[in-house]
Length: 257
Ligand SMILES: Nc1ncnc2c1ncn2[C@@H]1O[C@H](COP(=O)(O)OP(=O)(O)OP(=O)(O)O)[C@@H](O)[C@H]1O
Image (cartoon, rainbow, N blue to C red; front, side, top):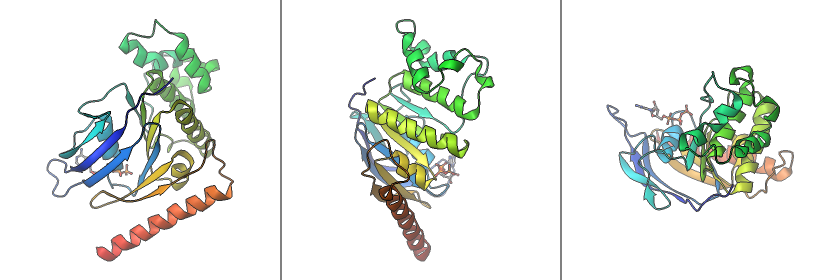
C-alpha cells in the first residue's frame, strides 16, 4: 500500500443549503498534505459532516471548491474513501465478500485475492472471514468497513464519527489502529469528531470549527509520534490545551452574539 501525492486544498468555500436563510459554512480555507492526519472538531451543527461530504465529492459547495491533486472535486472516487458512523455492509454477504466489494466493482479482485486476506489479517478478522457480517459485533463490523475502505488503496480516508457508537475499549483500539495504518501507509486522514481525546489520539493537526455560521476558528498542532501513549504527560497537556481553546472560542462566540 502506498499513497500518491493527493494534496487536499480547500479555497474560499462557503455553502448555503437550498431553502435555508443562512449559510452553513463560510469562508473555509484549508490545505492538507498527503499523509497528514486532520481532525475536524466542533459543536453539533457547525458543518463538519457537510465539509467532509464536500471533500468526498458527495456534495458540491455553493461557493469555492475542494481540490485534490489540483483537480476540483465534483464526484466521489475510490481514491478517497468515506467511512460513516454505521458501517454500511451488505448483511447477506460474508466478511470477506464485504471487504472485497470495492475491488470486485473495480474488476481487480481476481488479480490479487490475497490482498483482501492480508487486510482482514491487518484488522484482526482472519478467524471471522467466512462468517456472515450479521454475526459480528459493532466493532468487528466497523473493522470490515475499514478493510473495505483500505482495499482500494485510497490516498485519503475520510471518517465521519466512525467510532462513536462503539464501547470505550473497542473505540480506543480502533482509533489507535486506524491512525497507525494511515501513518505507516502515508494515507491522508480527515476525521470528523466531537471527541477531544479522539482528536488528539489520531491527528497531527486539529481544526476547530465554530457554528452559526460554520467556520474555522482555530487549530492545534499535535507533534506526537505514533503509536501514541495516552498516559504520557504531553498527551494530557495537549488534550487540556485543546479543551481550553474550545472554551475560549465558545466564550468569544457568546460575547459577540
Ligand atoms: N441537506 C440539508 N439541507 C438543509 N440543511 C442541512 C442539510 N444537511 C445539513 N444541514 C444543516 O447544516 C448544518 C450543519 O450540519 P452538519 O451535519 O454538517 O453538522 P455537524 O457539525 O456534522 O453536526 P453533528 O456533529 O451533529 O453531526 C445543520 O444546521 C444542519 O441542519
